[in-house]
Image (cartoon, rainbow over all chains, first blue to last red; front, side, top):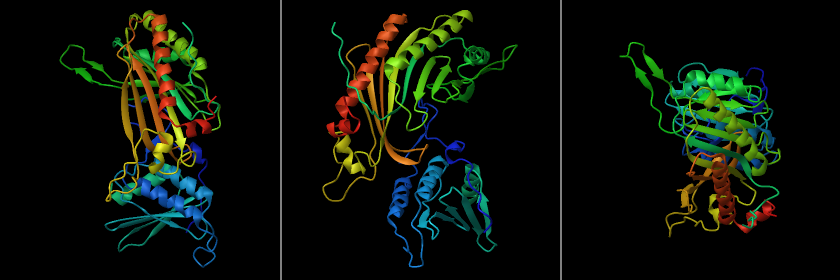
Length: 150
Length: 262
């Protein structure tokens, strides 16, 4: 996989999606935990990764880093994921978090490192996989749109 | 009349507050946004354009000799520190304050109300000078957005009664176990001025840090008897009084200890 690139500033990421309808008076950004329906379950799964101890995979896997957890949460809170199916969430041996979506013939793996770097591997059935680095939320959103065939 | 002391907290969970007036629509058009921004730009150098609040009608009269288009738009004017915001549309005016970061101190109503009144005065003067007339205020609004972080007094939505003692557990007799999430939208009648207190409880993610929160939004609104400055100020105080007392009455003593009630 290519060299990881780090998000320049996690908390300065552009606002991709905000849970504010056009009638909102509110300024501070929040996203409802009730939409999409799987979001709460996914958040709970991400939180549960905190409990993993070193060597959780019997191969020397590192505990999931707090940074990876918070970055994954922030990224999910800012993306347009209403139409996406629930991702499979898994710890990574280097302390990161993997998100995996599969829809028909399209397969997307996103890896979030504790330092904010985000890698991806996208695969269309019957074709070569394409690895890469996501440099911004827009890059991640484009990948999700690709899964949906947008 | 003796002054009532409102509940107060050293560490309240308020993340954002706003005050607002809704008024009879002015003959406000696109150039007025720019002209008004020019007047406040020193204090609010950033802007965003948003859809308006409430009903919005896009008007296009293509049959007239000179086609006229009225675009329903709300403009945001934001200060350099990104902690204060003016929202303007043809029939509403808002001033929002938010914590610029989670450690920033809370700004009290006593500090924010004069700011709102000053900015409203600028808007009203602008409307007069541009011959838009004096805004005829139909309603006043005061709102507090509170963020209750998971892990601080609550851990799951089956704990909701730890925060709001009057809320039930929403568990069924056998089939339905603990709810995954709960949200609520409640309103109360205020005793005068056609007032309402709206309470919205919503499970949410704070985008600033990705944390799970319960967002508790409490908004008081009422209709002023006139658009006189003193009456508007009285209505703001009335709404704020209900918001603060409502917050205190709905939330538990356990949470009051966490927020260090005085």
